[in-house]
Image 1 (cartoon, rainbow, N blue to C red):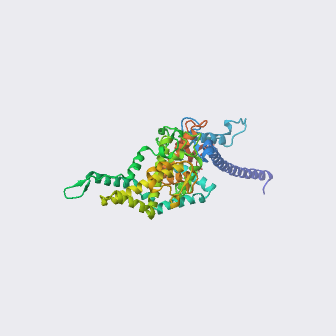
Image 2 (cartoon, rainbow, N blue to C red; image 1 turned 90 degrees about the vertical axis):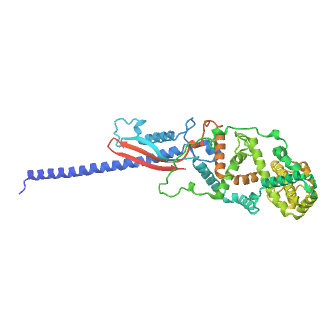
Length: 486
């Protein structure tokens, strides 16, 4: 039989065992709960830290261009991702180490975390892959704001250029060929008998028009060249001409190809052009507060000054209009009959020269008409891409007097305006070159704003894969990786 003292001793031992087991369970649970809580706090702290870092996008870049990028220079002279790593480290410390700025007295910190290190294992910069990320953000902005209807008309114009094969009309080579053929014939003369040769000499109206080609196109297409912008820049300091910092690219957490690396296609290219037209100036609508005033012309030509860029664009417009006008003339039987009649008259002593003289006259007529067209465009008027007889300005009998038709009186007309022709020329420009020149313009503009004197796009971060190491005074060590991008 048990006595009461023996029973009390048994209960005491039983309770001690139970309490020790419960204490062990409690300690184990507390350890696991604390570890889980630390992990959760680290994840929240990392997310908040990266949110804060990505909230530090350059405000001026957003205001002017609706682009989200972190300027890793933060207004200073040195643009390096280490600055951004430092910002992430600082935010993590504020989130995970409250004792840094808060006095907690005698209260025990149950987590005692220390952020040991943060660094980026992957990074994507604005200028990587010839500005693909800038192009991507701009295209997404335009898709969201306007949709694809914005570029439907331009797609139609580009299809018209392809249908008429205007890009394959090589007027320069054909002109050089005809001039060489005619010059050789004049030098050799014409044999009228076995021993007799006569000099071949005739006045070809094309000669006078061809001589005008070397006088500078702006002298004919502008009313006053003295009103042109004299702005010029040193291109060596901008992205398309200097050695750039490069990112590694970033890998999506779930794998797959990032959408910004997918081919945007011709529609995406046209949307980017519309974005540039919306944000940048041109000859008829200059950017008053930009380092270059004719910025779209810079995208097309890439020269360091406004005058040279406008000159190149004017010559490109002449080239495009001349090709279109030649195609039209060759299809107009009435006009071709006039050309053939004069060609036969000029080559009466040398009929074999008739095709060459005919070609030279067609090219000269088309060029004179093109100068009138470009003059009209630069005065704010419109010119159809492909003309009809009612759109033609210059009669064949007036080709030597074409300069008298260079007037700004009638500006409207019908067809495409100067801005639309700029869009066509941009579509014919290499996409990567166009994008990098657009980035140049962004750098030019932002460097004129307060706090952005040393701004450079290759210091602007689009996305990162960040790694952080965190330790606890209770023996825990963690590392966490996150991929964030705009």
